[in-house]
Image 1 (cartoon, rainbow, N blue to C red):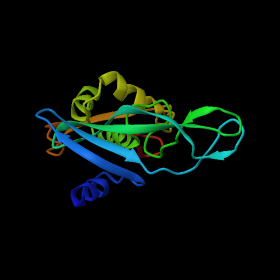
Image 2: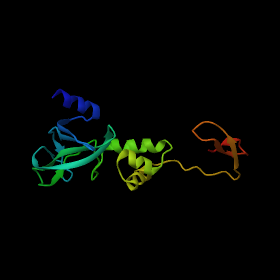
Image 3: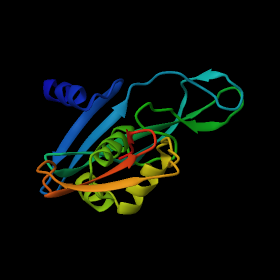
Image 4: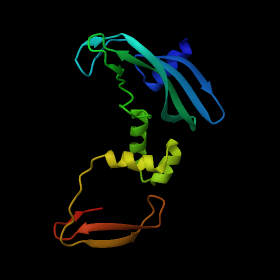
Amino acid sequence: MLKYNFINNLLNLKDVFVKNVVNRDDFIEIFVETKKKPHVCPVCGYTTSKVHDYRKQRIKDVPIQFKKTFIILRKRRLVCSECGKRFYEKLYFLPRYHRMTNRLSFFIINELSNVNSMKHVSLKANVSAHTVKRIFDTVSYTAYSLPEVISIDEFKGNSGGSKYHCILVDPVNHKVID
């Protein structure tokens, strides 16, 4: 039981019980179940903890030991005793309708912040390049307008693993653009 507590702390999953861990040659599966707690009905606002049924959901997570990692979640579907509406419990680590954790999305964004191609990030995160592109498109960033005049200069350098570098400058305001 102590090893599962360690896995809980390692993955930073709160209110989750780790039931089992299966370590295969090319992937790792972590079987988890959430702690039972009351949830608010999305229709009438009544608080309920009455379980209707369970289902297993396979969720992609950040790679561990360069292996694909999946969280197998035993997900509860609750039923409202007031209006009869059936709904799934809300999970802080998994957005609605998603099959990958927030942590994996943040990992992909962090890898994109380094100078990496989307294909390279997709191989590192074990997702498709299209998924990496969709996550990149969700990030809002400030689009800068270019000045009226741009100066381009190339120079010899030894940083970043390349021999030649390029700099873009606004010559009117004397500011480096990129």
